[in-house]
Length: 136
Image (cartoon, rainbow, N blue to C red; front, side):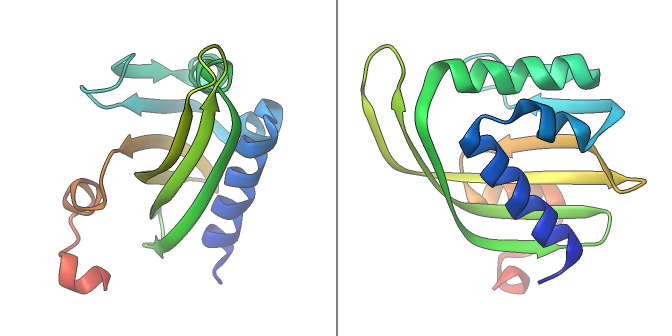
């Protein structure tokens, strides 16, 4: 497992624990958190404060958050990951059973400079410029 893959898995565990400070410590001061157009809160969050706010919003909406990673592709300055997540709605108690996720994390100086998530693997692979066959 590469260093970037290990860091990413550690970040997912921190997210499950709700450890926003650990996640923010890995962020570049100019980090961008990109929500897709179909997100409840679409758009880009800027800087560490924006990054922390995006994570806080997710944690306010869900409890019992869990990520099961299928694959992480280390591209050096970018990491592409996909799998499923599950959680329970904090207010509704609705159970979100395994739901697909995908993301691209870009790194600069060993810190996260951009985090972008997607609802499906093919969308993330296209955004990263990876052919499905090459991704395995």
